[in-house]
Image: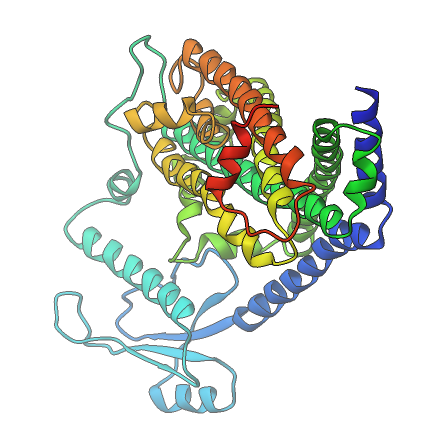
Length: 443
């Protein structure tokens, strides 16, 4: 055990003390933040204060069009089209909306909207949405619907109340937060397995190609060398991951302080990525008290505990396989690409199952993915986010953890037998068939 710790300490210090570690850990997020901040700055700057003059001769809007932010501003004026055209030429306004005196909501005529320059698709969508909403309200009021009745119709009401068999109520906010937590946790472990697994493989390849492994093997056993590299590089990855986590939250806080209108700007976008569905559900469910109520129903101690366990278990399981591949590869990097396919396929398959599990945590494929050791580190996090026993039963959780431990012991045993032969073998192209014979070869 002492020799394993010595190897792990050497791997940890040699990587942490390099300048590239500081550059990749601290410099890279700051550079990304700089580009991200510039993109946000210019995007806000280019769409800020789009002033529209409204000449409402028919008094359709009653002197008011709702505007949730400062990107699109409606200003009512008493001017004719010639004066509006002149104001447009002088750049007093970016556009104008002219409503003729004979315009009616029941007629077939369209409103005249003119702009000095071409209007972007996002700004066009905001203008169209707000004008259509104001006209729709005017039409409903024209059918003798009072303002109170109109507000009541437009207010969302939940007619169906979802609850589990135990009687526990599940609102949309809780489901949205569970979706987001499960998705983020699964993707974080997915990234960890790929980044730090390949880091272990490259570390083994470097020592083999440079013949340093031959010297080290004279002092420690191949199994001790492999486990030391796994623990040492894993510690580097853990430190790097924690620093990134702190920087990400710090950068997000800094962005929120520097660009306070950013959240409003993003809420006004008509097109959202698929990953923002959960956040959209939280926004639509109500005010901040509803979101806080949804967060309070999430068992974060369970999620954090499971994340740490599956983070460590998944890394140890896959890093042993990556180390085995690294020990079998010679100078040609293309050999590693061909040998990595059987290892990376389960990780990609786990992401596919996770996309199903976050929507249906109790489906058959989700249960299988959360129990199978090669996919459980990613899929189980999607189910745990919904809680116990709603998302996953306690028996399934314990069984999944036990199978992951057994899977790690099994892959470590197989990888160690491959490692001890491959680390000292040179000049031969290795295939998985050859590696399989090494794994079952007697001592």
